[in-house]
Image (cartoon, rainbow, N blue to C red; front, top):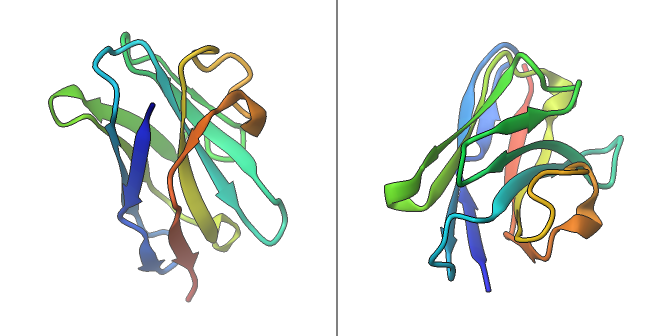
Length: 126
């Protein structure tokens, strides 16, 4: 059973950057995926990215492609979401989620994930 803890949220001005972390525990293999979702005023839960831990392949929604980048530090069991060129529309609560069945197939669907972190707030405002 995966346990996930996010950190790294905060407040930035438009055009700024933040790096979110998701520390994963409770699993001994690398055969799982971590997705990132956000809850914004516009969307209850938007799937924005996903990475498969064993091979590091990453996937992004159109809304963040080219601005957000996933990476992993497997020694620290941590997944990072680097967010650049942030916009006010990126404001929301960001969650990481764990999946051991779908490996980022259909990564935008919350129902594909069984494990969720508590969320971290990101605010983009001038």
